[in-house]
Image 1: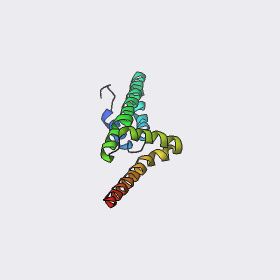
Image 2: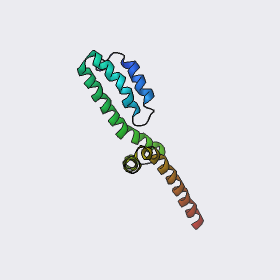
Image 3: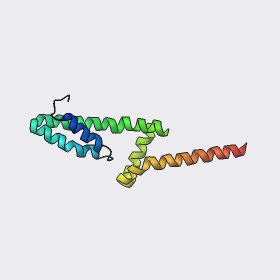
Image 4: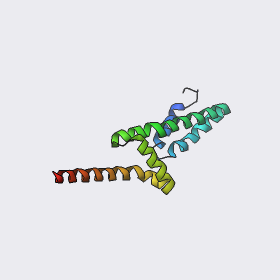
Length: 121
């Protein structure tokens, strides 16, 4: 709506629902927005691409790690490092599994530590 794109609300809803697909969902949904923008004006299509890229970078690198970090009690930098390492070692599957596996391991280790601390007393 800010850049004057026709059907911006409908296109935003498409991006909202496809954003559930990890990593590529929002970019898949960007295709219709770029097509509609290109029909209006080729310059507007560039604005859409730049806008979606900027928003996805902010959401993926700032907002998501902060939200996941608060809910899972994991530092956001740890989440970013986990995703980078898992992506290099195991690709997309590794990125999907890195945070849940880390969270489970963290809970197991902290509970075992507390259990051993109670037994020492």
